[in-house]
Amino acid sequence: MDWRPHIVVVEDEAAGRQLLIGYLSKRGYRVTGFASGVGLRRMVEREIPNLVLLDIGLPGEDGLALARWLREKSSKICIIMVTAAGETVDRIVGLESGADDYIPKPFEPRELLARIKSVLDLERHILIEADGSEETLSASEFDLLKLFADNPNRPLERNWMLERIGHREMAAFDRAIDLRINRIRRKVEVDPEHPTAIRTVWGVGYMFVPPAD
Image 1 (cartoon, rainbow, N blue to C red):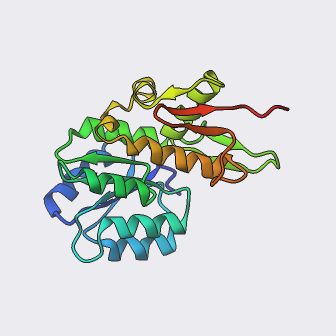
Image 2: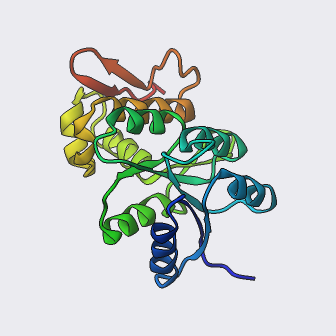
């Protein structure tokens, strides 16, 4: 059995797809490539990959719809959306669709590799519930939770949080961090619609309030 992390590259441009397959294969990953969502859907029914690198601008069914489908299939699949330069709205929608990260074109292969390693690094990022069940956290979710735990009962500004967790590229659109917070709330709050642990501080950012007991 091949124990290497399995990455699926969904990119309709053949040359770019083959370039990514070759680059990631040489760095120890098992890589499968598809030109559209058709092949991806068939493969996921047989095997759940570790990560899907998903271009938004695909012919036919676009990457956003595929991201939503993947997230419905499994919460454990890591998803990195690839967007065209300047498509800020698409990046936001991509995160809302369940993506763990995004990377705009053109990108350096080393930057992509760093992002892949970041979102795949889930083994140490486990949230243990009171009943003993486990919930995996993406690297950025883990970083945010650690930041809250290190600063209890203190209002934290969005820009300061972005600087501290090293995701300054998100600063171009503040909603990115809000989306991360919403996803964390779904994992840690009893009632995510009425959060008590991670509270919104209007005009500032967020504050972690530990339980009294």
